[in-house]
Image 1 (cartoon, rainbow, N blue to C red):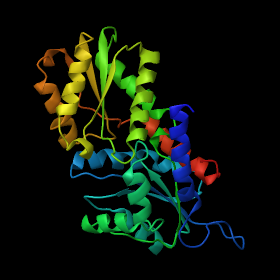
Image 2 (cartoon, helix red, strand yellow; image 1 turned 120 degrees about the vertical axis):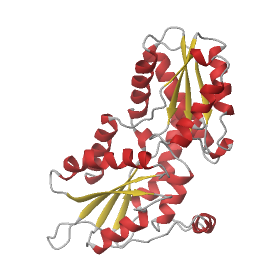
Image 3 (cartoon, rainbow, N blue to C red; image 1 turned 180 degrees about the vertical axis):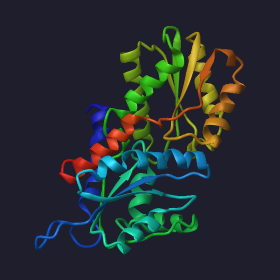
Length: 305
């Protein structure tokens, strides 16, 4: 079976129970009364205020469109860890305001321990003792809401990421002849196969659409102890074959710890740094991502996500 198809089926099978499960009473219309529905945009969180602001900007950009037809009563943002408002804080606020249902949109790239283990556990949709102990150690509050919860797919559900990286590669490199690309993503040990499929799919798209012959990949997160070395090696792999290397973070937002201390450090440490192109950017801001959030909420409302 095609590897990408296999990964897609795996993600769908893992996600399906979360989409079908919920907490509290059903949000369907009963006795002629319309359910009060909210939307919660969930992201990882960061110590960096600039990073957090980029995610809050998504909420500000989509709020009016999501609420325009009157089906959604409120849109909020929650950070999984490091800072408030947390997922538990926002879900408690929805309960206190009498919401019947909350559509949770994880602004994560693809399947990971966070999206498939941590978030459902925080929301009371899973009860894995190992995950619960880890979250308790990290002082992440768990909260089982009264409102019914529906989890949507993640960002790799559409062509959004591929189009984003294509645009950014062309903006950074201009003429892509004799230029290779280094894609740097966070990575995930447990779901490494899915992450490899994600960056591999993006790389094939860049080769097809931009005529980029050489694409290398590197992880920059916990999987590699937040070391710049994997990125540095990937840069050298590209420079061995091409005149220039365009380094593109496959990260949702800009965090100095990643775009600066890890990826930026690898660029600076390259013996051929004059041949390396790097903007220190991220997937956000992207109007296409905002459009996707609006679309996935509408599809979920209509039972089609």
